[in-house]
Amino acid sequence: MNCNQQQHLIINAKKSGLDKFVKQSVPLRFGKYSEIKTSDFEFCFNLNGEIKSIRGIKPDWPHPAEHFKRTTGNDWIYYTVGDKSSDDGIISWMGEYYLPCLPYSSNPVWEINYFSNPTVMSALAEWSQLFADLYMADSNGSYPHAKDLIKRILVANDDQMLYERSQQLDKIIGGKVTVLPPDTRHVDYDVIPLTIADGCLYHCKFCCVKTKQKFQVRSKENIYEQLRNLKNHFGDDLVNYHALFLANHDALAAGDNLICFAAEEAYQAFGFRQRMDQKPFLYLFGSVGSFLEAGLPLFDHLNRLPFYAYVNIGFESIDSETLSLIGKPITPAQVQEAFGKMLEINATFEQIEVTGNFVAGDNLPSRHEGSLTDLLKHADSKKQSKGAVYISPLKDSPRKRELLPRFFKIKEESRLPVFVYLIQRL
Image (cartoon, rainbow, N blue to C red; front, side, top):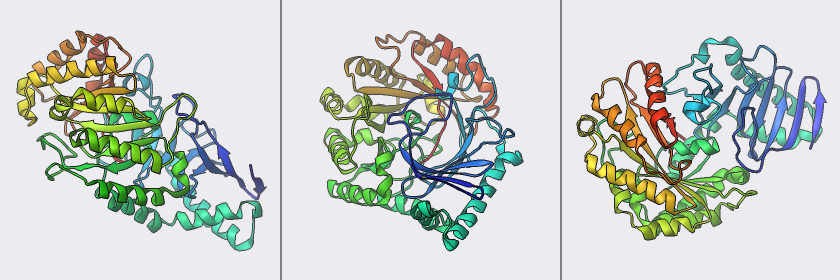
């Protein structure tokens, strides 16, 4: 560890956090990174020298666990611990000890206006000041033991450079990842995206991230090209990733051969490995149709991959009037069958977890919540810790905060874990 203190900076060029993802109410880092501290803030950088997070360390900072995080897509997201929304706080409805406050339009059930807090917003101004201080340090030769880190930071963190890096990633995979599976919360949404199919099967009316593209799978040649370019793009920081997202909106419909081919090739290309007792994670979306069509050989093959796989299915509702209103071209019978199959897959395969999404909103038919509560209350689950159900507030639904008491009522009746789904992009 290189530790230098001159003037007001403390620079740690090589730090190591946890080697596996765990859930803690205190901020814990995963993987390898660099850190610079001023008297007021802590700045963390990835192995490419890019800024990753900022946290206040003075007493006037809102909470020791709250911080800004910069995503792969170059969004600054503020992580808050919120207030006491229930006996257990945010973790009781998000499944995590924090709530990401997104800087773009989404479907938050709880909005926190961190922009109005000058102490919080001063963190971004302090980052600009630190960048200027590092430029001067590089010019006059200060902090000689950290000179390589300082040069990497100065090269990597020009605003235009960071923007172009995010655009380059979109170009590599052939488009933006407009929504991540809710289960990516388990790795703090840090995934490597690999597109194996474009478009979706349904083009539902209610969907706020829908694409106009018809469903079409990618070729193996295209996947190989993505793998080469992604490996180059993530560079030195590749070792800090422990999760793969097979994009995009219905990768399950791509079929057994392409899914497992892409996962196996990515495992080798990106150097994934088991960390302690934790396998790397594999995430993908599926529709009710593609899930019902998927045979047991697909899941048997998926179960034998060197990943723990999460497959997230968009059920949305088991009420016919609601399905019609939101423009979902499936029937309650199909939803019932797919839900039963989810329970069966979760009970049968140790390395696969199928989860499901249902919508919530003020203007939905009254039968929607009752039928959902009844479905979850009578779920014949042999493994009640597996197969979370996510309640996703409709983006344009008013009074989202008032949905929480109704959410807790559904959660209390359910035999499966139930959480709120926050629509978050890469």
